[in-house]
Image 1 (cartoon, rainbow, N blue to C red):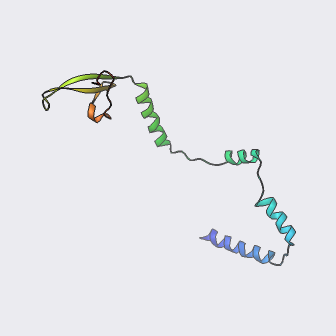
Image 2 (image 1 turned 90 degrees about the vertical axis):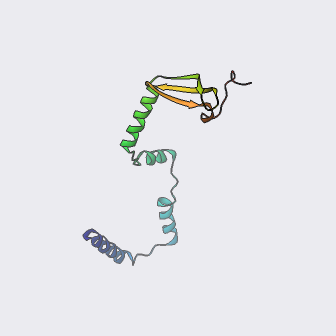
Image 3 (image 1 turned 45 degrees about the vertical axis):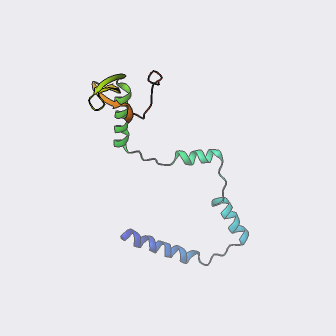
Length: 121
């Protein structure tokens, strides 16, 4: 609260001091061209980009990195097999993915419905 009142007081003092200053149109335009309408070179743009602050959430990056390392660093095996199904009184094709000892079973209809060349009739 105290800083806000000091800021407002300072603004009023500066306005009182500069309200009597009159500038010509050419002077105003030259100031605008040098400050607001300045065309930045490639070097200035790179410096401006490098001076920006980027905030990266460490917890999310760490969790994503660990997940990628676990999934990519562990061997996985995809096998096609047939399983007896009582619903259709016969065998159905399934895909089994083994990742670190865990078996994930995908029936053919739930795995995108793709068919291998061998399975086509």
